[in-house]
Image (tube, rainbow, N blue to C red; front, side, top):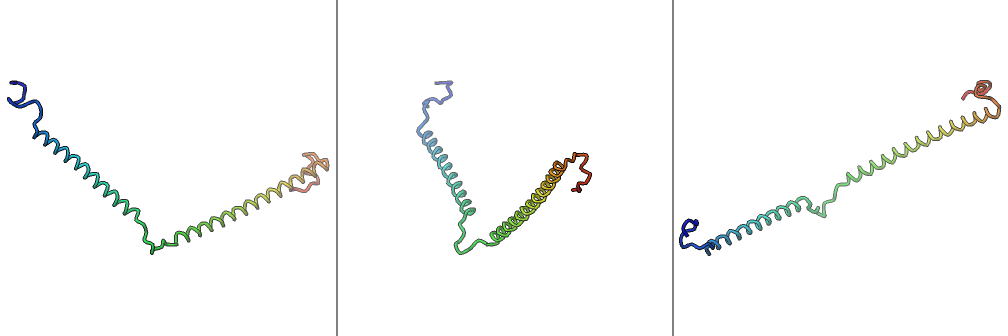
Length: 125
């Protein structure tokens, strides 16, 4: 067919050589993909092995962090106990103050003193 773009005598179907070359190219592409995935897998395994290597059994972890933690915990408990004692002292002081004020109110009510008369003969708090 003149003008169709194909040489005279060539068929519209690809030749067997072209098919073999395409098959070879596809095999190479697949092999390259497999090789790349294998390299990535090896690198990831090596990275994991380096980062999460088990410690040898003969080496013990240093005890200093545990000692420091226990000391800090003991100090925190001491501070908490001291704060608790201060709180209890504040509560005791306020309870005593409340008791004193209630006694003043009771004295005022029983002695029939009004709010303006409180200054007459009642000891100051």
